[in-house]
Amino acid sequence: MMASVRLGSGEHTYELVEGWGTPPSHIQYGYTHGVCEDREGRVYIHNQSAHAMVVFDADGTFFTSWGEEYASGAHGLQLNVEDGVEYLYLALTSQNRCVKTTLSGERVWEIGCPMDSGVYEKPEQFVPTNIATAPNGDFYVADGYGLSYIHQYNAKAEYIRTWGGKGEAPGKMKCPHGILVDTRGDTPVLVVADRANVRLQYFDLDGNHLGFVTEELRFPCHFDQRGDDLLIPDLYGRVTIFDKDNKLITHLGDNPGVEKAEGYPNLPHNQRIPGKFISPHGAIWDRTGNIYVVEWVNDGRVTKLRRV
Image (tube, rainbow, N blue to C red; front, side, top):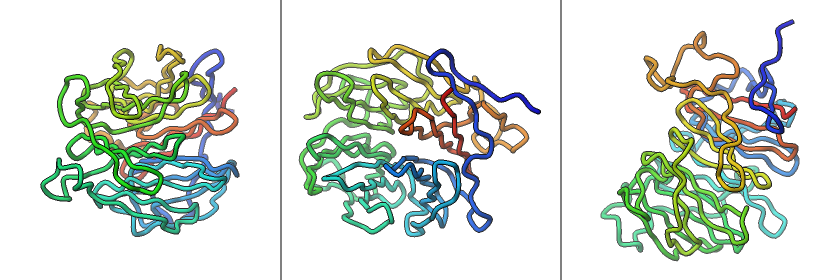
């Protein structure tokens, strides 16, 4: 029997679950970009295929799929609970829009380019990558592949404000790819994966710059939070966990230099080593502390790590 593959250390030790979540034969993943879990323990995989949302039970059994209309733009995925009801927030890159849906895919609203912000000359310049929701119902859209702004809306999807833009100075960003309302401290704050600047950038919920995190990052994509810990899919071959003070706890599946491999990220399957990541794009903890990772690979790559 092959020995199990373990990653991490101490309280953050995980075992690779081989073959979790294999889709049925009629579904072929495109690039796997987003992942979330609902309160029933079902796991949602957002990918660029005719089945843009693929849903599994916690044991990896296929449950359902939907979302053909989102195939070309499938990217950011965030689940939020509002008055006891769960909703999904989708950031659709090449479709230049964001959509809120029910868990079964029924559309609640759609927003396009926030022309009221005054920073766009044409709607196509808005290319949203991820969405974060705040305790008061506001949400924040990261225009990661567009002009590198953050846009704030209220719970009714009414525009509030914009800040950022491309640059390296405090408050400026280069590809604000991921975004999360970080509630680990006394006051909720916004953390942005300022990816091309290889840093995390913090703002208050009104958009005022608070600070940076620059250590132990390679190309940060997005976030998830569990208790005092922060999970960061770091695109160039690893997943990182920070503590409450944003100090390193561990790197998982570190694969240094993989981004320099010929054909990256679309490596042939014989070069995809179990327990070594290629291009982690989204990652979450589930309710029991297991981790799910989805990777930016053309035929998809989904990994479950069981906490041990």
